[in-house]
Image 1: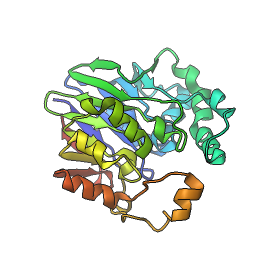
Image 2: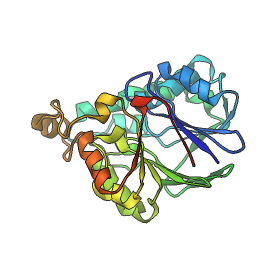
Image 3: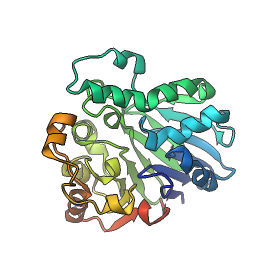
Image 4: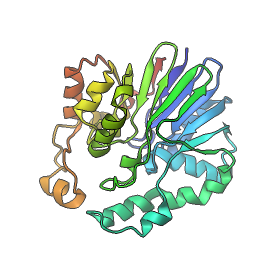
Amino acid sequence: MAKVYMLTETSPFMMSFVIVTDKDNCIVIDGGRREDMPLLKKYVGKRKIKAWFLTHAHNDHIDGFVYEMGKDGGADFDIENVYYNFVDYDALKKKTGMPDREYFLAELEEMMPAFNAVKDKFKDKARIISQGDTLYIDELKINVLFSLHDGLYSNLMNDSSLVFKVTGKKKSVLFLGDLGPEDGDVLLRESGDKLKADVVQMAHHGHMDVSMDVYAAIGAKECLWCAPIWLYEEKAVPDWMTEEWINKDKKRMRMYGTAVTRRRMEILGATKHYVTGYGTQELEI
């Protein structure tokens, strides 16, 4: 059976997964920031990375990958394919009409220029993956259930997160990336009948994430939290999440802390919680 390692954070609230197949190959998901690379390399070892998935262009998810590519083209890894579906930087740079363009541009500039600067380093391995695609990697089946949708601009990068389900011999795991409320609604509407999974990676580190309806459709009994302890124990409405911040600065609604999500998962019958704040977590699928 495949093993899933959810790596503990060397940098704050990053997301990094290594899946080792029964043929001793690897799948990497995101990887975190550059300071998280030594731990990632420890878990990958000398294995071939059959697929490196980049969920979206935020630094807590892909800065490490970009750093490794810029340093030496990823020479420390044996990478076969890199899967992603990112926003079009040049087209969106010119776009107007979104509710908070200053924030929109800040999102666009956070990692996309750095990512675009290293694309030539892995161009022969790059694969643009889209909703509806299916991959088979050793014994694992991977279904892509959500990818970039034009027009989801209130939280540009999180709203473009790849969502995919990895099905092993024993369990299935649904990876939600940093999906938020609005794009979670789209996921439910377009792929609701395909969401059922045994394990779920909690969207956006478990706060400001998808609705209870999405988690209900998933029906997972085990939850993967990419969160330090302070974030895992965040209260329902954190002090910094003022009404002014929600309505004026972000132009987003339905914002809440992890306490809300934890209570929802309790109501939905989740019984096992894996939290990176307690160290690297391991499960078999």
